[in-house]
Length: 323
Image (cartoon, rainbow, N blue to C red):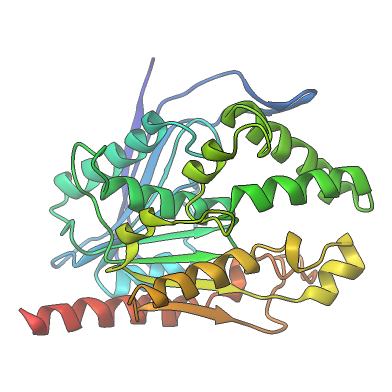
Protein backbone atom coordinates (compact mmCIF):
# COMPACT_ATOMS: atom_id res chain seq x y z
CA UNK A 1 0.00 0.00 0.00
CA UNK A 2 1.44 3.34 -1.05
CA UNK A 3 2.03 5.91 1.70
CA UNK A 4 1.89 9.59 0.87
CA UNK A 5 4.08 12.02 2.81
CA UNK A 6 4.63 15.67 2.15
CA UNK A 7 6.20 18.46 4.13
CA UNK A 8 5.45 22.12 3.50
CA UNK A 9 6.50 25.39 5.08
CA UNK A 10 4.07 28.29 5.15
CA UNK A 11 4.64 31.89 6.10
CA UNK A 12 2.09 34.67 5.93
CA UNK A 13 2.59 38.40 6.09
CA UNK A 14 -0.67 38.58 8.06
CA UNK A 15 1.14 37.84 11.33
CA UNK A 16 0.44 34.10 11.09
CA UNK A 17 3.26 32.02 12.55
CA UNK A 18 5.74 30.35 10.22
CA UNK A 19 4.92 26.69 10.23
CA UNK A 20 5.91 23.27 9.02
CA UNK A 21 3.08 20.99 7.88
CA UNK A 22 3.68 17.25 7.73
CA UNK A 23 1.06 15.01 6.14
CA UNK A 24 1.26 11.22 6.15
CA UNK A 25 -1.55 9.04 4.91
CA UNK A 26 -2.12 5.62 3.40
CA UNK A 27 -4.66 5.52 0.56
CA UNK A 28 -7.48 3.04 1.15
CA UNK A 29 -10.67 2.09 -0.63
CA UNK A 30 -13.94 0.57 0.44
CA UNK A 31 -16.77 1.26 2.84
CA UNK A 32 -17.53 0.76 6.52
CA UNK A 33 -20.94 -0.62 7.42
CA UNK A 34 -22.54 1.16 10.36
CA UNK A 35 -25.95 -0.52 10.17
CA UNK A 36 -28.13 -2.29 7.65
CA UNK A 37 -28.22 -0.08 4.56
CA UNK A 38 -25.95 2.58 6.09
CA UNK A 39 -22.35 2.74 4.94
CA UNK A 40 -19.66 5.41 4.91
CA UNK A 41 -16.54 5.50 2.72
CA UNK A 42 -13.23 4.81 4.40
CA UNK A 43 -10.87 7.74 4.88
CA UNK A 44 -7.11 7.52 4.47
CA UNK A 45 -5.56 6.60 7.83
CA UNK A 46 -2.66 8.71 8.99
CA UNK A 47 -2.04 12.19 10.34
CA UNK A 48 -1.43 15.84 9.58
CA UNK A 49 0.86 17.73 11.96
CA UNK A 50 1.53 21.47 12.20
CA UNK A 51 4.80 22.51 13.84
CA UNK A 52 6.41 25.87 14.63
CA UNK A 53 9.19 26.49 12.14
CA UNK A 54 11.54 27.94 14.76
CA UNK A 55 12.17 27.62 18.46
CA UNK A 56 11.59 24.89 20.99
CA UNK A 57 8.24 23.10 20.75
CA UNK A 58 6.65 23.18 24.19
CA UNK A 59 3.88 20.63 23.71
CA UNK A 60 1.19 19.41 21.35
CA UNK A 61 -2.57 19.66 20.83
CA UNK A 62 -4.09 16.34 19.73
CA UNK A 63 -7.26 15.81 17.68
CA UNK A 64 -8.43 12.44 16.38
CA UNK A 65 -10.13 13.13 13.08
CA UNK A 66 -9.05 13.67 9.51
CA UNK A 67 -8.07 17.19 8.48
CA UNK A 68 -5.82 17.15 5.43
CA UNK A 69 -6.45 20.67 4.13
CA UNK A 70 -2.97 22.16 4.51
CA UNK A 71 -3.82 25.24 2.44
CA UNK A 72 -5.78 26.87 5.23
CA UNK A 73 -5.40 26.87 9.01
CA UNK A 74 -8.13 27.19 11.58
CA UNK A 75 -7.62 29.67 14.40
CA UNK A 76 -6.74 27.05 17.01
CA UNK A 77 -3.86 25.82 14.84
CA UNK A 78 -2.45 29.29 14.24
CA UNK A 79 -2.81 30.30 17.86
CA UNK A 80 -1.26 27.08 19.17
CA UNK A 81 1.68 27.57 16.82
CA UNK A 82 2.11 31.14 18.05
CA UNK A 83 2.45 29.72 21.56
CA UNK A 84 5.06 27.19 20.39
CA UNK A 85 2.67 24.23 20.47
CA UNK A 86 2.42 21.63 17.71
CA UNK A 87 -0.97 20.37 16.53
CA UNK A 88 -1.80 16.92 15.19
CA UNK A 89 -4.94 15.54 13.56
CA UNK A 90 -4.73 11.73 13.49
CA UNK A 91 -7.26 9.24 12.18
CA UNK A 92 -7.91 5.58 11.49
CA UNK A 93 -9.74 4.64 8.28
CA UNK A 94 -13.07 5.24 10.05
CA UNK A 95 -14.12 8.89 10.41
CA UNK A 96 -16.74 7.68 12.93
CA UNK A 97 -14.19 5.67 14.91
CA UNK A 98 -15.54 4.46 18.26
CA UNK A 99 -12.32 2.79 19.54
CA UNK A 100 -14.13 -0.51 20.06
CA UNK A 101 -10.80 -2.37 19.98
CA UNK A 102 -7.31 -1.71 21.30
CA UNK A 103 -5.75 -1.87 17.84
CA UNK A 104 -7.47 1.31 16.69
CA UNK A 105 -6.29 3.10 19.83
CA UNK A 106 -2.74 1.84 19.29
CA UNK A 107 -2.83 3.05 15.70
CA UNK A 108 -3.56 6.60 16.86
CA UNK A 109 -0.97 6.33 19.65
CA UNK A 110 1.67 5.31 17.14
CA UNK A 111 0.95 8.36 14.96
CA UNK A 112 1.27 10.63 17.99
CA UNK A 113 4.47 8.95 19.16
CA UNK A 114 5.96 9.25 15.67
CA UNK A 115 5.48 13.03 15.62
CA UNK A 116 6.72 13.37 19.22
CA UNK A 117 9.86 11.41 18.40
CA UNK A 118 10.60 13.04 15.04
CA UNK A 119 10.22 16.61 16.31
CA UNK A 120 11.38 16.30 19.93
CA UNK A 121 8.04 17.27 21.45
CA UNK A 122 7.73 16.81 25.22
CA UNK A 123 5.44 13.81 25.65
CA UNK A 124 4.38 14.98 29.12
CA UNK A 125 2.76 18.14 27.74
CA UNK A 126 -0.14 17.00 25.57
CA UNK A 127 -3.66 18.39 25.29
CA UNK A 128 -6.22 15.88 23.97
CA UNK A 129 -9.24 17.60 22.37
CA UNK A 130 -12.43 16.47 20.76
CA UNK A 131 -15.94 17.39 19.70
CA UNK A 132 -18.78 14.86 20.13
CA UNK A 133 -17.56 11.31 19.41
CA UNK A 134 -14.03 12.68 19.07
CA UNK A 135 -14.32 13.76 22.71
CA UNK A 136 -15.26 10.19 23.62
CA UNK A 137 -12.12 9.06 21.82
CA UNK A 138 -10.00 11.62 23.68
CA UNK A 139 -11.07 10.17 27.02
CA UNK A 140 -10.67 6.56 25.90
CA UNK A 141 -7.23 7.33 24.46
CA UNK A 142 -6.16 8.98 27.72
CA UNK A 143 -7.53 6.15 29.86
CA UNK A 144 -5.94 3.43 27.75
CA UNK A 145 -2.56 5.17 27.81
CA UNK A 146 -2.54 5.00 31.61
CA UNK A 147 -3.95 1.49 31.96
CA UNK A 148 -2.12 -1.78 32.48
CA UNK A 149 -2.94 -2.78 28.89
CA UNK A 150 -0.80 0.00 27.41
CA UNK A 151 2.68 -0.94 26.18
CA UNK A 152 3.78 2.65 26.67
CA UNK A 153 2.37 5.61 28.55
CA UNK A 154 1.19 8.58 26.54
CA UNK A 155 -0.78 10.43 29.15
CA UNK A 156 -2.08 13.94 28.44
CA UNK A 157 -1.53 16.82 30.83
CA UNK A 158 -5.05 17.99 30.01
CA UNK A 159 -8.19 17.00 28.10
CA UNK A 160 -10.85 19.26 26.57
CA UNK A 161 -14.03 17.68 25.24
CA UNK A 162 -17.12 19.31 23.77
CA UNK A 163 -20.59 17.76 24.04
CA UNK A 164 -19.32 14.17 23.94
CA UNK A 165 -21.42 11.04 24.60
CA UNK A 166 -19.84 9.11 27.47
CA UNK A 167 -22.50 6.81 28.93
CA UNK A 168 -23.19 4.26 26.20
CA UNK A 169 -26.16 2.77 28.04
CA UNK A 170 -27.88 6.16 27.91
CA UNK A 171 -26.57 6.84 24.40
CA UNK A 172 -27.99 3.55 23.09
CA UNK A 173 -31.42 4.17 24.63
CA UNK A 174 -31.50 7.74 23.32
CA UNK A 175 -30.64 6.47 19.83
CA UNK A 176 -33.38 3.85 19.84
CA UNK A 177 -35.93 6.39 21.04
CA UNK A 178 -34.95 8.95 18.37
CA UNK A 179 -35.20 6.29 15.68
CA UNK A 180 -38.59 5.07 16.83
CA UNK A 181 -39.94 8.59 17.28
CA UNK A 182 -38.78 9.63 13.79
CA UNK A 183 -39.59 13.29 14.44
CA UNK A 184 -36.46 14.65 12.77
CA UNK A 185 -34.82 12.73 9.92
CA UNK A 186 -31.27 13.61 10.95
CA UNK A 187 -31.83 12.57 14.56
CA UNK A 188 -33.75 9.45 13.55
CA UNK A 189 -31.07 8.23 11.12
CA UNK A 190 -28.29 8.88 13.62
CA UNK A 191 -30.24 7.13 16.36
CA UNK A 192 -30.79 4.07 14.18
CA UNK A 193 -27.18 3.61 13.09
CA UNK A 194 -25.66 4.47 16.47
CA UNK A 195 -27.83 1.99 18.36
CA UNK A 196 -27.25 -0.71 15.74
CA UNK A 197 -23.49 -0.07 15.67
CA UNK A 198 -23.25 -0.27 19.45
CA UNK A 199 -25.34 -3.45 19.53
CA UNK A 200 -23.18 -5.10 16.85
CA UNK A 201 -19.85 -4.22 18.47
CA UNK A 202 -20.79 -4.70 22.13
CA UNK A 203 -22.60 -8.01 21.76
CA UNK A 204 -26.22 -6.95 22.03
CA UNK A 205 -28.39 -4.38 23.73
CA UNK A 206 -27.54 -3.02 27.19
CA UNK A 207 -30.08 -5.48 28.61
CA UNK A 208 -28.22 -8.35 26.92
CA UNK A 209 -24.61 -7.17 27.39
CA UNK A 210 -24.60 -4.62 30.20
CA UNK A 211 -21.05 -5.36 31.34
CA UNK A 212 -19.71 -4.71 27.82
CA UNK A 213 -21.45 -1.32 27.72
CA UNK A 214 -20.17 -0.35 31.15
CA UNK A 215 -16.64 -1.48 30.34
CA UNK A 216 -16.63 0.40 27.04
CA UNK A 217 -18.10 3.66 28.37
CA UNK A 218 -15.58 6.27 29.59
CA UNK A 219 -18.21 7.00 32.26
CA UNK A 220 -21.59 5.46 33.00
CA UNK A 221 -24.16 6.54 35.55
CA UNK A 222 -25.57 3.00 35.35
CA UNK A 223 -22.40 1.58 36.92
CA UNK A 224 -22.18 0.97 40.63
CA UNK A 225 -18.49 1.71 40.39
CA UNK A 226 -16.38 3.78 38.05
CA UNK A 227 -12.94 2.64 39.14
CA UNK A 228 -11.52 3.47 35.71
CA UNK A 229 -11.98 7.14 36.59
CA UNK A 230 -8.95 6.73 38.84
CA UNK A 231 -7.01 7.06 35.58
CA UNK A 232 -8.26 10.66 35.28
CA UNK A 233 -8.09 11.81 38.87
CA UNK A 234 -4.81 13.67 38.29
CA UNK A 235 -5.60 14.99 34.81
CA UNK A 236 -6.96 18.46 34.15
CA UNK A 237 -10.26 18.11 32.33
CA UNK A 238 -12.63 20.57 30.71
CA UNK A 239 -16.09 19.55 29.52
CA UNK A 240 -17.80 22.14 27.32
CA UNK A 241 -21.54 22.02 26.71
CA UNK A 242 -24.43 24.27 25.77
CA UNK A 243 -27.44 22.56 27.42
CA UNK A 244 -30.11 24.35 25.40
CA UNK A 245 -32.88 21.90 26.24
CA UNK A 246 -35.62 23.98 24.62
CA UNK A 247 -33.78 23.88 21.28
CA UNK A 248 -33.53 20.08 21.53
CA UNK A 249 -37.22 19.75 22.43
CA UNK A 250 -38.44 21.99 19.63
CA UNK A 251 -36.16 20.74 16.85
CA UNK A 252 -35.50 17.10 17.81
CA UNK A 253 -38.09 16.22 20.49
CA UNK A 254 -35.20 15.33 22.79
CA UNK A 255 -34.87 16.20 26.48
CA UNK A 256 -32.08 16.10 29.05
CA UNK A 257 -31.93 12.28 28.98
CA UNK A 258 -30.98 12.43 25.30
CA UNK A 259 -28.36 15.18 25.70
CA UNK A 260 -24.63 14.54 26.10
CA UNK A 261 -24.53 17.36 28.66
CA UNK A 262 -25.92 14.99 31.28
CA UNK A 263 -22.94 12.63 30.86
CA UNK A 264 -20.35 15.37 31.13
CA UNK A 265 -21.93 16.98 34.18
CA UNK A 266 -21.99 13.61 35.94
CA UNK A 267 -18.36 12.89 34.95
CA UNK A 268 -17.10 16.22 36.28
CA UNK A 269 -19.06 15.79 39.49
CA UNK A 270 -17.69 12.27 40.00
CA UNK A 271 -14.11 13.42 39.44
CA UNK A 272 -14.57 16.27 41.91
CA UNK A 273 -15.91 13.78 44.47
CA UNK A 274 -12.71 11.79 43.89
CA UNK A 275 -10.64 14.91 44.58
CA UNK A 276 -9.85 16.14 41.07
CA UNK A 277 -10.25 19.88 41.51
CA UNK A 278 -9.01 20.46 37.95
CA UNK A 279 -12.18 18.95 36.47
CA UNK A 280 -14.45 21.68 35.09
CA UNK A 281 -17.88 21.81 33.47
CA UNK A 282 -18.07 24.86 31.20
CA UNK A 283 -21.59 25.74 30.07
CA UNK A 284 -22.43 28.36 27.46
CA UNK A 285 -25.55 30.13 26.24
CA UNK A 286 -26.45 31.04 22.66
CA UNK A 287 -22.96 30.38 21.30
CA UNK A 288 -23.70 27.20 19.40
CA UNK A 289 -23.87 27.98 15.68
CA UNK A 290 -22.76 26.03 12.64
CA UNK A 291 -20.53 27.53 9.94
CA UNK A 292 -23.57 28.26 7.79
CA UNK A 293 -24.98 30.45 10.58
CA UNK A 294 -27.67 28.03 11.71
CA UNK A 295 -28.20 27.61 15.44
CA UNK A 296 -27.03 24.27 16.86
CA UNK A 297 -25.77 23.88 20.45
CA UNK A 298 -23.91 20.69 19.46
CA UNK A 299 -21.03 22.67 17.93
CA UNK A 300 -17.31 23.09 18.63
CA UNK A 301 -17.59 26.87 18.32
CA UNK A 302 -18.95 27.09 21.87
CA UNK A 303 -15.29 26.60 22.85
CA UNK A 304 -13.19 29.75 23.27
CA UNK A 305 -10.11 28.38 21.51
CA UNK A 306 -7.76 31.18 22.51
CA UNK A 307 -8.73 30.87 26.17
CA UNK A 308 -8.42 27.06 25.96
CA UNK A 309 -4.85 27.24 24.67
CA UNK A 310 -3.96 29.92 27.25
CA UNK A 311 -5.40 27.68 29.98
CA UNK A 312 -3.28 24.77 28.80
CA UNK A 313 -0.14 26.93 28.62
CA UNK A 314 -0.90 28.10 32.16
CA UNK A 315 -1.08 24.51 33.39
CA UNK A 316 2.27 23.79 31.80
CA UNK A 317 3.93 26.86 33.29
CA UNK A 318 2.48 26.10 36.72
CA UNK A 319 3.91 22.58 36.56
CA UNK A 320 7.32 23.93 35.59
CA UNK A 321 7.34 26.26 38.60
CA UNK A 322 6.70 23.28 40.90
CA UNK A 323 9.83 21.48 39.70
